[in-house]
Image (cartoon, rainbow, N blue to C red; front, side, top):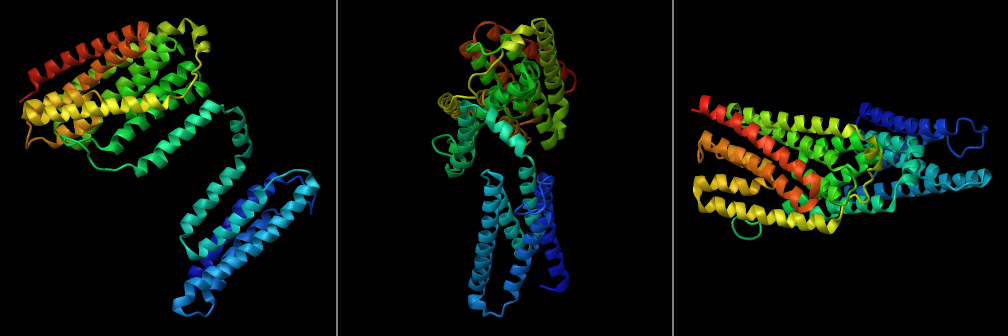
Length: 434
């Protein structure tokens, strides 16, 4: 390591200490001099000390075979000694102040470790970790207030969702199992994660933004991933009367509009020449869905008491989410079986089946099959058929799960989008198709 690099790395180590120390010193800025275990100067010196210890360990004469062990021993002993000193002074501070807190001690240890890493590793990682640590320290009141407000069902659901994503997903096999191309277990689990995430997002949005804005924000965000997931989540809440059916239906309309636009974006990104045939029908359907959402919101706006009564009881139910994901996986297998059995005609039929679950996958597949396997017209027809299938599925979901006025509103929404989109598609094929 040359002199310029050494100075730069020591500067980063010092900056890490100053950054963390600034937050620690500001928080105790009103304390009497000499009553704090560590302030901005102590933390700045701690970061620099970690860098200097690491530099000394690197400078020690050593043989190549034992170099790593020597470095580890020096750093380990220095870190242990520093940790003992900062812990001792933090204990005395706690006793004098009459409270219990290990934050200062842990922050000091982290500062020393990051200072050492700035010498030995990637300076960007060390600096980024210091910024993240400072943000966590500065958000003390907000984090404590959030923990006080969170309920057990919310915490349990958040933990389950995190476990599904960061524990369950990585260990599942990422290879198709079964006939007709099979089903990828990881993809099925991803469907379950999307369903749970959309439901959880709606719960959080309503809690923090209110019924009207929260449902629409959650629906728009959920529609980016899956309008079907939004429909299922809102249907369950309509069935348990956790919100006004028309407001929940408006959320499905917003998610549907996002889905229509999302498909247009995928086609534009992958094969722009198909856009002229796909876009008119989907944009017309998106505008129709937004029109229904606005109309229902104006209609529902008259009764503000119903907004106040909206209170979701449970972010999501794991068993029902996984069960529905498995059901959707079966639909995917059936769609592939039909597609393989009947060639180009089967591609359209398969798109209808798979479109019940995943419009994006159908869109990408059909675009990639053009023009080698499918003509432009066939590919566009298959994409529109998948979108229509997804739209029709909302009627079935509403009738099977949501029932009542929610199901009726979804039927009106689906029929309206199909009618307007179908008319736009007919005009497009009549005047623009080759």
